[in-house]
Length: 505
Image 1 (cartoon, one colour):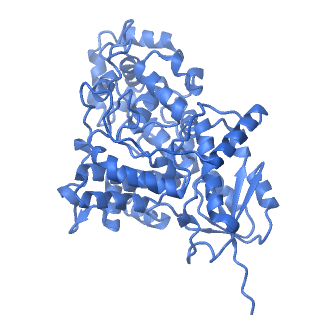
Image 2 (spheres, rainbow, N blue to C red; image 1 turned 180 degrees about the horizontal axis):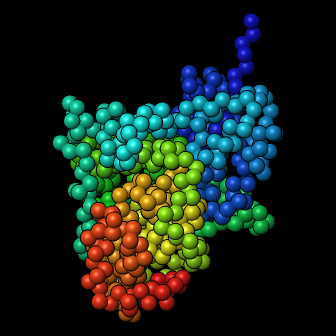
């Protein structure tokens, strides 16, 4: 009796690690041919950051080169055209996609079997069971994080959390060291471009010259891993040389040191080049070997096993309607200077510095994203759907599942508290405390009105005034909102913010 031909296995551009093609009872067939489709329509529909387009295409082509004769790599206008042009069996397997749009696309394919998601620690069904056990209570990160740690025995000693505490967050909020322009951490892993990168850059240039696509940001040397070998080297570099200094200053910002001690592993993780299990296990080994403080190891584990897993599952748990959440009724479109990454148009040093980092690299770490970029959008009342799209397109690690909960829930509070208990925004005092960005700025963080009024300080009070009724009912915001009554200059402040309008701060 003849053996049935294996089903081909479709791999998307963010499923590039070996764990997405390994056979198993809930995976591809043994020796299944792999199908990869490079769709130019992805870049035609929206203007992505040039560094992101380069990284994704380079990573896909590097993976195809690794797979060799096992892969059918199709370059096409659209995914559907690519599938139509592929030869062989129409029977296909595919790992659970990472976006609602891709899931709809796969669901419409004939003879396609969707196997469970890979590249995450917690299966969908397990999260659904955990959420059901909450019996309608809010789903909060800290409770989920502890549950994941117990299930995977991460940083645990005899059933108790390593170091005697679940969370070392309060130890990991130190401002940057005074008088230093850099943290002095060992340099991060550095990419070396090859002939595949040269080919990608040639193609992107040609597409742009032909008017077929357009990009935001600047084209520069590739900074992030585009292959499995590079991703593993970056993980080793972080664990051996940079993780020890990570925790203490993970919330700090320095103008001349955008990388500080951050792992810079979100891009290879979200491309599927790394598996989260190997990342957290590597950090735990470094701590147990005595070379890393427990607070640093825990801070990194919380980012991967806590926040990343939490965001992934909330994306599916909240469903497609979540992207339309806008309880604050923010409707203003993004101003051109922000949409175009025009850092030179901005006077506020914090915003100009961070916007330039995004323009030049397609990356900045979580505090500038939340407390500088996201805070500006929230204070000015920009449409959260447009803000989500901007983050998705302009960050090398940005995907729909990543940015939708992070922006709608965390950054813009557009879900009214489903994900977080309060809006994450602040005046200039926080930025001044946690960075070196205010000293040389034209504005003063303590000034609310006048020529030197900090846009974040003034914007913060204007935001509280605009949403006073709602926020006064929030137990974490009520006392702060009551402070509006003590501002004798509030009418002047509100008029000042009205005049500023859409101009760059």
